[in-house]
Image (cartoon, rainbow, N blue to C red; front, side):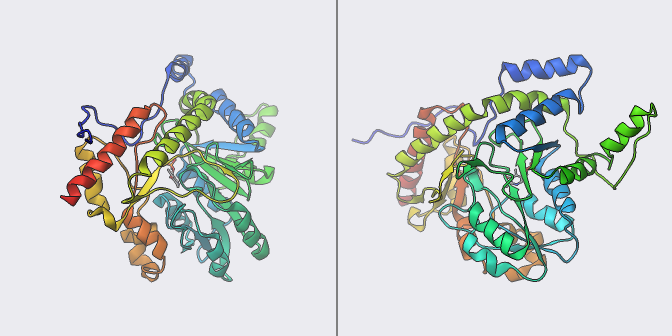
Length: 392
Ligand SMILES: *Cc1c(COP(=O)(O)O)cnc(C)c1O
């Protein structure tokens, strides 16, 4: 006899940050010190992140969206420029192309991994293309090698959206600086958090200098130093910058989160492997695929697709899981189907069949370091119960 499904009392959220005593003490230390905005801890965090990833330059920011914005500006994106990107991302990736006056050009995804389909990128290049902005989706890397080849052949830049990718490796190297720029996010649902926060990674010191000015009111530090040495409090504005700086209060969290991220990721990998094993018994949902090339997956998301054989659609499936105290999320609705993009660029609707198929069927399961193995087993039992009821 199959044992009956017993509903849990506590709601299992889709995501939950792990904040421990070290983070709390460090934030309190910042508050007591009187230095709460950008200062020594922000610098310490940048150095630690550069060391962790192996990149020469790391610029912490108020968000990944801010990093996308000034990154695209510093790369020179202007009205009329085309940027090749993926529809399977958070809207911020595409919104920032629009914010610079650029035109997003979508290529379809691989249905199994949801990564940008590198085989379709070259055909998307036109005389107006300036760069490629892929996403390392769900904590696995996109096919960086193939994208770099296309970029080199056509003189394009590569800017990696690595919002899901702290700890992610492609052929043994950390994602984020294969091309000219990479951007990370520390939003609470990401693999490590600073409440809100982001970070740009790069190798070129000149580009880093410009980005530091774009980040903070257009101020040039070297000019500031020049005056400071002369004893004058003058600062110089060298470009019309933004205010996207990273506070020491955020860094106080980030320093300890970064020190724990390998441990967090190891736990995510364990939970994902457990989902994979248990969901093998549920043929009505498609499990996430992983790339065939050498990589290290940090499982930011565990995304399944509800197949037609389930007998109920994705949204109904999510509602039924919620009724059984299981939280889920949609990552993502294909960006070209969002009202703004569908109105402005209707030509894409129907032209990205894999992304549209996935967009209607995918959802993300609870996955965070503090989850127990029994929580994973509960989610899979809840799946089976939902399906048993759908079959009537
Ligand atoms: C979360 C996310 C962003 C935006 O990050 P913020 O730090 O919230 O601005 C950008 N791209 C992708 C793929 C994301 O998942």
